[in-house]
Length: 96
Image (cartoon, rainbow, N blue to C red; front, top):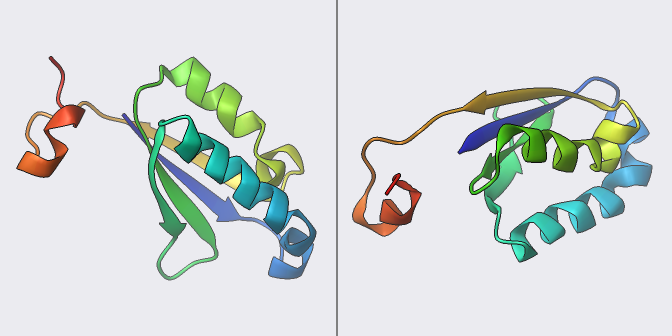
C-alpha cells in the first residue's frame, strides 16, 4: 500500500487548466480499484491518495500519467507501508 502526496509547486491558477483532466485521472484509479481514498492536504495546497494493490513501479507509472505530475505542477511524495493491523472494515488491506 502507498500513501501519495501531491504538493502544489505553482499557483492554483496554473493548475486550474489541468483540474478536469486530473479529476478524470483520479476517477480512473478508483474505477480500476487501486485508489481507495483521495482528498486535499490539510494546511497546504495539494492532495493525497491512498493506493492499494500495485507494486511501487506501477504506482510510479500511474502517477506519471497524472496531468499535474506530467506538467510539473506538483511535487510527488510516495510512502509505502504494509499494514499489520486494521479495523474490521479494512481487513482486506492486510497481507494474507
